[in-house]
Image (cartoon, rainbow, N blue to C red; front, side, top):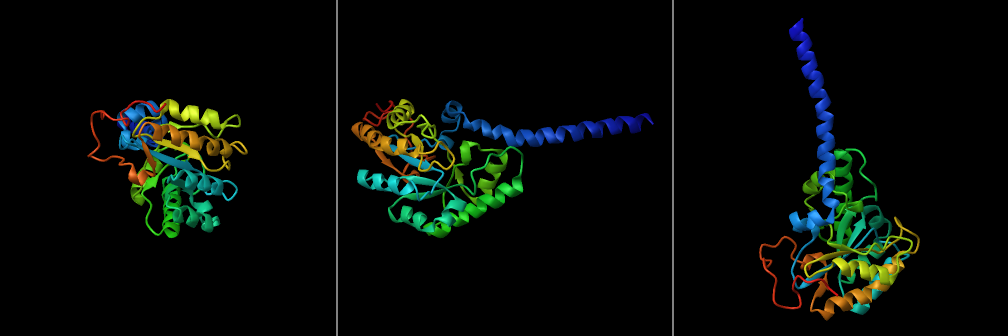
Length: 265
């Protein structure tokens, strides 16, 4: 009887451990949301690239109320960018998705919907991410390369789904906090430039669908100043596809040019 009791207790303990391990596998990778450790330990995930280049990215679109204004501003500045789009929005606004590509920008995957991954759901994440990647490939004419999860929360489920879909997760090194109601063009530019260096990746938003109403105008107004500040120190600006993320040929020491590792001022 004693053996049976001990064995039952062992099975009970093991059964209690399994959910904890599943939860840890789901949550621990989300720690990459912390920008400091991400840049130091996972530079490719942070979007660190060529020291003479800055990658400009936009999340959450496309949105016919706001994305066209951002596209017009980028045209005027002669800048191309990467748009991390929502799969459901791509299919809902095909003409706008095509227009982004037609203007020379890069489409990347932001997910199917802008949800928060509170609980493990590996099958759902894999299914929805594959669906979003297919939508992006359909309108751009080529399989997407990049994946940035909503809110930058890269859980174990999402990491596994990205690998299965052959997408490269990438977050950012600088953001503008342009989703806030109190955001202004000046605050967005100041916040971005405080953390921006050569080789950095900037994240802004081309819609207010998941943020304060009208906040996209702050990002729009900040663009000329951001682009001007980068160009003033010799940095080029473009999409992630030209950024050299994870390249083995990136210099390991600062270069003696304006594209050094100093912050953009």
